[in-house]
View 1 (cartoon, rainbow, N blue to C red):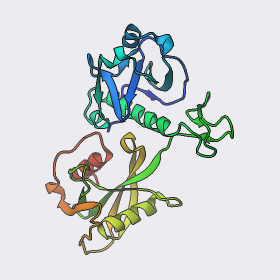
View 2: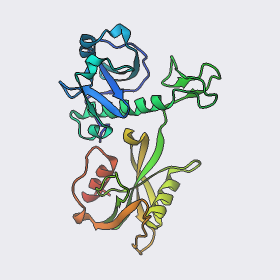
View 3: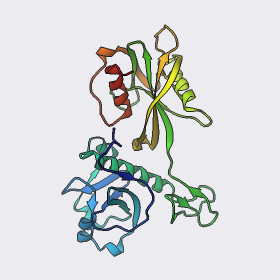
View 4: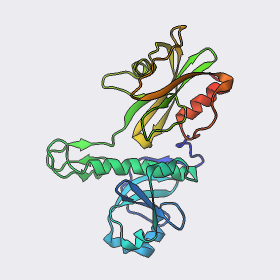
Amino acid sequence: MIQDIAPHHYDNVYHPVPPKAGDFIFFYREDQTLLSAATGLPFTWEEVTALAPADELEFTYYFRIDDKDFHQCHTIPPTIQAQAKEVSMGHFRSMDPQWMAFAGITAYQLYTWYRSHQYCGRCGHPAQHDRVERAMRCPVCGNLVYPTISPAVIVGVTHGDRLLLTRYSRPGTTRNYALIAGFAEIGEPLEDTVRREVMEEVGLPVKNIRFYKSQPWSFSSSLLSGFYCDLDTEDETVTLQEDELGEGTWFDRECLPQGGSDISLTREMIERFRQGLV
């Protein structure tokens, strides 16, 4: 999965230190990430300082991988723009090497969160970066806000040697087969989220809910929890939530469709079922 970057080590402890030699710098223009046109990777500190006066730039520390820190630069000097290529968030799904793809999408999640929390949601005053924690603090009312992480579930519904796969109907969503998924609601245990999402999306009751694995999924600022469960009826008839899904199909283990990205929890769970591990 995208977060599996060993032997590299991701350190998310907040170290608000300035950039140094060997570090990487992210630049953003609206919803686009600016990468070095020369390497296809984030700009190195050495590239930035060769192209622009660093003492005139403002940086925010993001996180560390191995001994390399990753930062955002808040302005885009014309000399940087001239040496950059703009990519969308989806670029990081297939970026190589994978550890850098993980860095790119995690940084983008932080960037969009910071961009959306420039003002205090309680009193409306400009917020400031906290000096100790990765958070935004209001200097007027003291309101402290941390990065938003939305809990969600991925659900493998099984019936003997059969697995239920779905495909979305909404424009702009992937057309690959996937497992049922959805966000947890306020006051709802994840096991209840599993029951509710399966009933809402395909109209089926489930039982024997069991946790498999979790995954940070920065593409939607989510923390995904993967569950397998069994159909709690002999009737496999699917009743689709048609405003969201275009297909819900039972597949025998040996007939499961191939393909899809190996960076996702969905794909790993489908492959485990294919291999008879569930």
